[in-house]
Image (cartoon, rainbow, N blue to C red; front, side, top):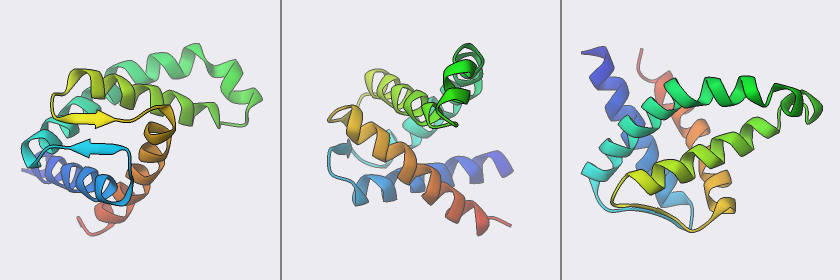
Length: 111
């Protein structure tokens, strides 16, 4: 049950971030739910590998390159999920930051 609540909270965070940012489009709640699953899977499988591979660059940039990795993973999710569109790298970069902040705030209310 807890995983379903987290999934719905993530989809709600995606909807809020989409509302706040231009250049991001999600076609309805089903696309947001699918995007939450795909982003969760990508972040669980692909992100750790990329973080380890780019660790020297991340250290040199004091962790800011992790935001670039996040934006690239959002662009990958946009290529996979129908009904989710990102205007470009800048929009994906901002979407990653706003999504992380909104997720943080919404997950505070979970408990």
